[in-house]
Image 1 (spheres, rainbow, N blue to C red):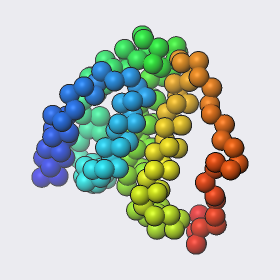
Image 2: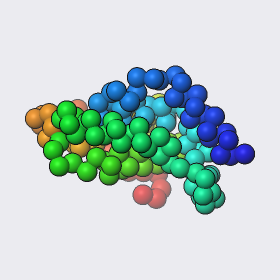
Image 3: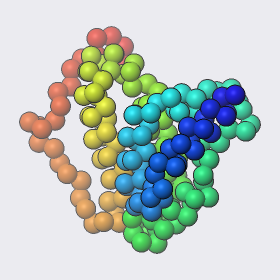
Length: 159
């Protein structure tokens, strides 16, 4: 039943965004981050299936299509020459999923309102993804000035 619900959500999302696969790596990964934050029910279902050990569950349900996009990213320079495109995809997916699962608890523990934390997390995620693609674009990381950085306050308790 969980697998059917997850498959239904995935199919609805795929139908809504036919052009997703043609986007360059950076834009595809950022779009998926936004989706995961905006539609966390799929992440919850996928997490339950993974924790349950369901052999029919795939965290990469359209991987052949993804692989084609990753190969194109390598060919056209959206990912740097020699990049491990599959590992970059898997690790960005893991970051998306992890944040989506824990975002409400992170907001509570840090005392940062959820909308603000989502925005700050999206900016941090964009920088992480940019770091995977920098060599391909010749860009250099943007350095923040001290005044631009969000304050880092002690959390109420824990880490």
